[in-house]
Amino acid sequence: MTAAFINPAELATPSGFTHAVRADGTHVYLAGQTALDAHGVITGIGIVQQFERALSNLLTALHAAGGGPEHLVTVTVYVLDMEDYKAHAKQVGQVWRRLAGPTYPAMAGIEVARLWDIEALVELQGVACLPRDGQNVSDG
Image (cartoon, rainbow, N blue to C red; front, top):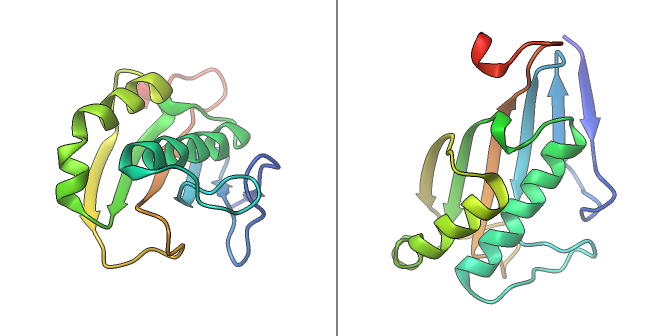
């Protein structure tokens, strides 16, 4: 197996992790992303703004690994307050469609007691599958 460890300059400098790992050229494992800005500060007030920044960070890491939102096969959403997340599901969905498009990968939502960054309300982690040379993802 070959692996490329990818840390885009647009994201906060990681400490103890890698933003994306591309394995065997087709699989991209995306580290959990919160609403950190490039300076390592959580931005956004409320779940919707933080979700937007976290998704943007996830897609930035994926893009740096050579993929796009259409290559996502699974995303896990970790939230501090599931009821708050569900109450804003429509706005979160609008953010998803604006940044990632109209389709969704396999997803899970998990309520947690705390995230690494104490100010974070949401964290997104994902896996993507990139096409082999000249092959569509749906071609197998």
